[in-house]
Amino acid sequence: MKIQLTIITELGEFKGSPFDVTEDQYDILKQKTSSYYEEGGFEMVSEDGNWIIISPEIVKKSVLKINICDV
Image (cartoon, rainbow, N blue to C red):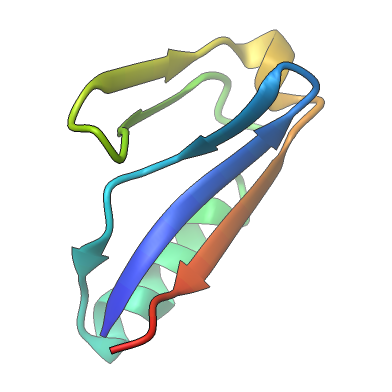
């Protein structure tokens, strides 16, 4: 399956580059992201291929969404 991470913040919405995962990897990702707010900052590759680093202060006030992309 293909998924895409989206972070919704007061500064805007940031979409990651879609990537393929297995069902097992998806389950692991869901477990790891359950501590999203506790881990501090967040880093990902954006839709346009750039590297995004989001500070811990913004992460605390954000929503992390894992979208399953249509095939």
